Length: 426
Image (cartoon, rainbow, N blue to C red; front, side, top):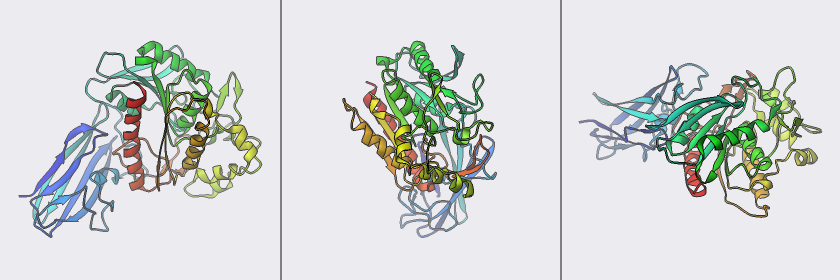
């Protein structure tokens, strides 16, 4: 009898699963599909395998046989990360509420037999509390773990999409951290654009978080993605005593202008960050080589091509470099070698080299994934949609990377984040 095993069937989104089939006819083709509704859009994947001489199929060990399969490597979670949306350009991989689990139906057909099972992925663990924050000038959503005991804290910053990164903050809380998903533009009470964002706002948010949760050992890390990762490094260098550790997904080594998240009335070379009311020098400023031509002419637009032109001006680079050597705490970096937004792999090497010059060295860890792109944040989510419509500029852009590499990077980076926090927050 055909038997489909999904173990565990119901767990956190970052928990790896084993998917296997028993009872097939040896040598027979076994077709397996997966279907998940993500924020109202159905995502699907498909693969075919040949049962071994025991009538077994082990997705973790076997490569799909058919060219029609949505992935072509041995991977127990390939059916998840290779899913494709049934609505063109859909990119939302989570349901709107962090408490609404992702439910995937897996179906198997072999000969005249078929069987199905359900795989459930939860972002927020049981007992996680969600608290909307709009006080003392700070806007965001605070997630607290089930335990009432003091715990370390993490401030979560998104990138040029703006808004509030609730899902990542909820995932941190699921692992025992108080996590503030901080909104700094495209949220109530703040600008619709990244242009002229004051660093004092984040200093205020760090102070608010400490006062609100009284973190264990006064530990407050900053976790940022893309522009948020640039910002995490910048904040830790500007306010070193206020930032206990940095987690930077696809970061930059430089201060950048407003770029794709700019106020259209000011343009993409407007300053993004202000300190004491004054704009910080950015990479495009007084740069004799910087050009948007390669970006503007590429379809989809590959932002990294423009950034590479700016990196030809050594003086402009030196003026815009984030002084990461001032960071006092440990740093975790994650990058891919085919980042379509900016050369995060090259940037991370620069950051690592500069951190090595610190007077008092601290832990530095770097996960650099070959062929991965910019979209590195979560494990076990679809990585098939590298082309997207930027939510602010409305330009068709690419994050770069190969789906299998992005999937690997998300899995390995998140595992490294949890180990990093366990190590440095004690």
